Image 1 (cartoon, one colour):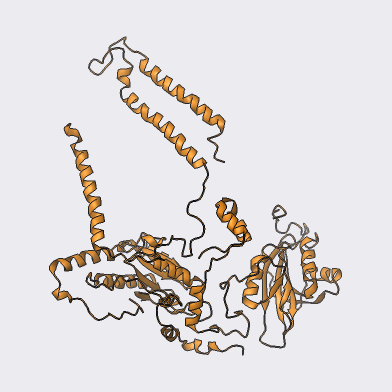
Image 2: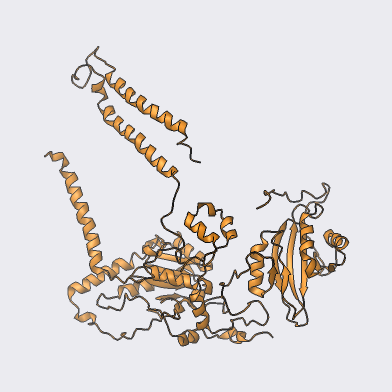
Length: 134
Length: 234
Length: 207
């Protein structure tokens, strides 16, 4: 296993121990006194009115889904950007630089195709009015 | 509501060469210039107007109980009066048991910059009922509820006359009447017992919800229950 | 706690000198943590709420007591600070909010109106919230100065630090009589709500 990931494992372990200790120590010292009124839903001191599960508008869901899609698109651009220098070179890099005359537009072209596909989808979403809040 | 709201600019109906409004100084306790609406009322409703007086620069007009709604509607609708703002609906019970109970309405004309106080006298021993002016002023809804809660005056034609300051099934009486002791009629423990048994949010009226414009956002089930007049809560 | 009657208020647990070292230190640790992180629920109804806000602001700063995180939901609060007069119409709401607070919880009655009804000895105001909920600290004043409230908070901190885990009655919920919803006897309520001073003659009606 790569030694560079050991701190991550350590952090994970520490977080778990911390959370378990906080909850566990509280559970040892707590004195639970449940009563029926205590367990009713809180509604500013009045008996709860109406149903907690109610319908809400679909526009919230639309925003979330569209965000996910275009956010993933952005995420895919990150490794592409990290290796852009290699992707724009027809031959493997020599000493961190591209040999003269070997510039290629392969990497750029690939990403543009990817973005163009998603652009079609974006224009569809726009025209359909999914970006309109009201 | 029926009409779209038209904002009124204060003083828009006053004469253009009228002096700028200023705080009145040296106002006599009685006498002085009466509000021109008092004379207009006298002309329009001769027999319904029982009396006019000017106290500290404010005009009081005593009106007959039966004609009150007509008077108020005329004051609201007539273009020469335009009393579009109802400030308050309240009542007065004097310590002297000979004097009648007065129900008081405070009207303001923003366009003409006028203030008028209408009174109806209810003799002691008579039924404490006056017409409700809710159809003219929507704000009379809660003001009349408060007047009912505190004095026990019934407003005929009110859509939802129930207590507003005290809880709905408050049984001790009407607090601001002169025969109501300051600390209430029941013992403190009994008052607490009754208060703790009350559910202060038992019933929302349709008006209360439409004011907040929340009705459309309520869940369907809740809307159906409210329309059916079902009491909410436990 | 306040007016709550506790038949087992006699010491039924060992005095501090006989407790073990671990129990004592655990008590100290838990109480220290609780006392220095009391999250208040400001049940502010009137003028005392303004003074409470002033206490929380920069000049008097409640943050140094760990109380800057106000909780307006009772679920996350430790201490209910009732600041202001409580009308009878609000009484069931205050009672319900208190009952919805999880243990450990304390109550501070801030101001004259919350402690005894204040200047409002009339048909509409509860004559002291200790008739509705058990109160730990009363802070008199109309309104109390921020220094007064802070003194009351410090008294509560001392009370919290003196608590012991061995005392099983500490975290008991109040138990109102199901028929009347009163948690103290009605005669006691009438006794502590007796008028005094100017209020004595206010029980008559008419002239």
